[in-house]
Amino acid sequence: MDSRDYGHLNRRTFLQVAGTAGAAAGLASAPGGRALAQAAEKPNAAEIIQGKSPEMIVYNAKLGVMGTPLNMLREHRFTPAEILYNRTHFPVDGVNKWVATTAPADRETVQNWTILVSGLVQRPKTLKVADLEQMDLVKRISVMQCAGNGRSYYWAKAKTPGSGWEHGGMGNLSWEGVLLKPLLKSLDLSPSDSVKFLTTNGKDVPPVKGGADMIKSVHLAFPQLDDAILAVRMNGKPIPTIHGGPVRLIIPGYYGNMCVKWVTDLMLMDEPTPSAIMQKTYRMPLMQVEPGKFTTQNLTRENSDPTYGFRIMSVVFAPLRGQTVKAGEVELKGVAWNDGVVPLTQVRISLDQGKSWQEAEVDNSDGPYAWYHWQKSVKLDPGDHEVWVCATDAWGRSQPLDGLTTWNPGGWSWHGVDRVGFKAA
Ligand SMILES: Nc1nc2c(c(=O)[nH]1)N[C@H]1C(S)=C(S)[C@@H](COP(=O)(O)O)O[C@H]1N2
Ligand SMILES: [Mo]
Image (cartoon, rainbow, N blue to C red; front, side):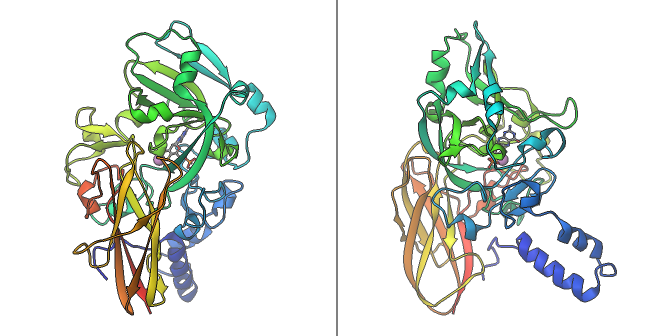
C-alpha cells in the first residue's frame, strides 16, 4: 500500500489492540498498562450525551466531542441525531450540563427563550423563539462539518492541537427556520450604515469566569448569508438540545464553528468580535507555513482568513479504509460537497495514484449545500488497491492531490484528495 495513505487506527481498533495487550500482559504490570486501562475505561458516547449511539468515536469525554464511524455515516441520507458528530467547547457537565442530551428543549424552556438583537442599531429588539416557530419556515439542506474534520490526516506531517478527527466530524442535515436577513429587516432596528458583521453568542458559558466565550462574527456580504436561517428544526423535528435546540444559527455551506448553537444574542457590528475564538483559533494562514516556525500565535487578521465556507471536498464511503472486498466488479461510492456558491461539476477517481483518472457518476444533490453522492463501478483484480477521489466545481476549484500542502497549526479545513487503501480477494 502507498506509504502516503493517511489511514491509521481509529479508537475502536485501538481499544481492541489495547484490550488484547492488557489482557495478555496483566494491565497493571504491562508497560503503559495504566494508560491502556484508562483508555479502556473511557465512558462511551451514550454515557456522555444522552441519546447518542455508544458506537460513536469519543475524542474528548469531558467536552463531549465525538465523531461518527464512516460505516454508520454512509447509511443515511440525513444524519440522525443519535450518530451526528458533536463539538462543544465547554465541559458538558457543571453549568452546561443541560446541553448533554439529544432530547429537544421542553415547552417551558422554549416559551422563555429570548434572543436580544442589538449592536449598532437605534432600536434593539427582543425575539421570542416561540414566535419564530409561528413564522414562515424555510428549509435548508446543508452539510454540517467541523473545520477540524480530517485533522488527523495532517498529523502525517506534524501534530497539531485538537481532536484527531478522521472524516466523522460531519453530517448531512435538513434544517428549518426563519430566513435571517428578512427577519432582521422586519424588526425595524434602524441599523447604522457602518454595520458589516453579524456577531452571534450562545447560552453555553465558559466554566471559568472570564474564560474565552464561544462567540463568532461573520461578514454579512457573503452569499451564503442570504440563505442563513435561525433554525428551530433539524431533520423535521425540534432541534436536539445538544445540536443547538431550541434555536441555532445555520449558515449553509459554512464550517460548524460559525453555526452558533443556543442563540441568545445577535449583534450587528462594524468589526468582528475581538474574542480569541474569532481572532486566534479557527483561522487559516493565507500562505504555506512550516510546522514549528509558524504557530497559531503568529496568526493575524492580515495573514489569515476565518474558517467560513467549506473548501471543496470528497470522501470515499465504499470500500472503507482497510476493508476487503470481493475481486471483480467493485462499486466505489462516496460523497462530495463545496461551499454551495457554485455547483459541483465533476468527481474523478484514480486507481493508480493520480496517474490516470476516470469520471464518476454524480447524483443530483438535495440543494446547493447538501452532499452530492457519487459512484463508479470498476473491475478489480485480487490484491491491494488504493482509490483516490477528487471533486471540481463550476469555478474550477478542486482538491490538492497532497492535502498536506495546506498543513496549518490549527489543523483546519483538510480537503486533500481522499486516499483509501483496501484489498480485493
Ligand atoms: N454555542 C456554541 N455553538 C457552537 C459550538 C459551541 O461550543 N458552542 N461549537 C461549534 C463548532 S466548532 C461546531 S463544529 C459545531 C458542531 O455542531 P454539532 O455538535 O451540532 O455537530 O457547533 C458550533 N457551534
Ligand atoms: Mo468545529
